Length: 383
Ligand SMILES: NC(=O)c1ccc[n+]([C@@H]2O[C@H](COP(=O)([O-])OP(=O)(O)OC[C@H]3O[C@@H](n4cnc5c(N)ncnc54)[C@H](O)[C@@H]3O)[C@@H](O)[C@H]2O)c1
Image 1 (cartoon, helix red, strand yellow):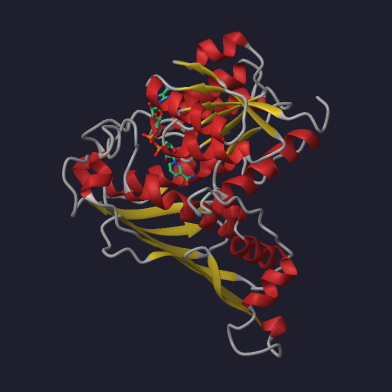
Image 2 (tube, rainbow, N blue to C red):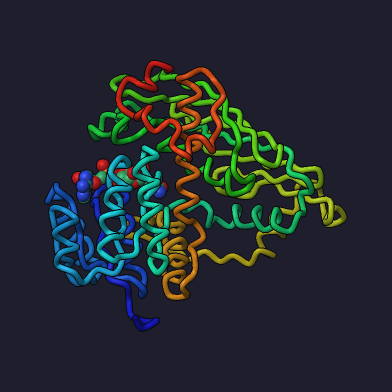
C-alpha cells in the first residue's frame, strides 16, 4: 500500500456512532468510505446520502458484514454496532485480512474478547484498535506525559467520577439499550468506560475491585444506573470510581490523579488543575495547567459539522493515530489489550456487586468467571 493511498473503510453499524465515523472519514484524506453495513437498510441509505452531500463517492451498501467482506476491496473495518456484537464482528473482519477499529466497549463478555485477542496476536501485520477517544484529549496526554516523567512522584490515589444523566427516553430509544446481552451494563459499561480507561491508562492494571451497583432512576432496563467501586492497583495506589446516569442535571466527568509530588484534575475533558513540585515557582498553586498543555504541544484537528458541532474531534485524532500505526507498522495508542483490560475491569465491578466479594481482575482476564454470563438476571440480582 502506497503511504498516500487512502485506506478503504467499511463502516459496520450506521447508527449514532457509525455516522460519526463515516463523517470523520469523509473529512480525512487518508480514508475512503467504500462500504456501509447495516441490517436496517434505511440507516445505511441515509448515511450514504449524507456522504454524497459531503462530496464523497456513494459507498456500496450491505445488510451484513460477510457479504461486504466477500466482495473485497476493504482495507479496514470500523465496528460501530451494538456492544454485544463487537468482538465477533471484529474477528470476522480480522480473519478476512482487514485492519479493525472497534467502538468501545470491546465487547460485553470476556470469552469473545479473548478469542479476538488470540486471533490478533496470530496476525501481527493487522492493526486492531479500540476506540477510547479521550486518551487523545490534550488534558489526558498532558497528565500521561507528566506521569511518564515521574513528575507526580509516587502515585497514591485517583478519583474517577462520571456524574451523568440519561433520560428514560434515552434508554427507550433502542431495544438493545440497557440490556445485559447487547449493552452489557449501564452507567459503567456504556458511559463510564471512557473515564475508567483513562484511569487505567494513568494508574496501570488494577489488582482487585470491590463494588456495589444499583438501578434507582430508570425503568425497563436490566442494568445499573449507579455503580461505585474501590480499585486497588498493582502499584499499591487506590482509586474510587463512581459512574451514574442518574445524577440530574448531569455534572459531567471528573478525574483526579494524586501523587507525592503532584496532582492533576481533568473535568469535562479539560485540564482544570495541574501542580507538580518541580515547577512550584512557576505561578499559583494549580495554575500550571495551561503551561503543561502548551509543553505537550498537542494540536487537535478540528472537524466542524454543518450544524457547527465539533463532536468528532477526538475521534478524528484517534483515527489519525490508527492510520499512522498501520502505515508505520506500529501499535496504535489504544490497543486491543487496553480495551480488553477496560472490559475486564468493568466486569470485575459487576461480579463484585453481584457476588458480594472482592474480585481479582487477573481472574476475570484469565476466564475464571466466563461461565457467569452477562445474561439477563445475573448481575441484575445485585442491583
Ligand atoms: N466512542 C463514543 O463516544 C461512543 C458514543 C456512542 C456510542 N458508542 C458505541 O457505539 C456502539 C453503537 O452505539 P450507537 O449509539 O451508534 O447505537 P445505534 O443503535 O444508534 O446504532 C447501532 C446500529 O448498528 C446496527 N446493527 C446492529 N447489528 C448489526 C450488525 N450485525 N451488522 C451491522 N449493523 C448492525 C443497527 O441497525 C444500528 O443502525 C455501542 O457499542 C456504543 O457503546 C461509542
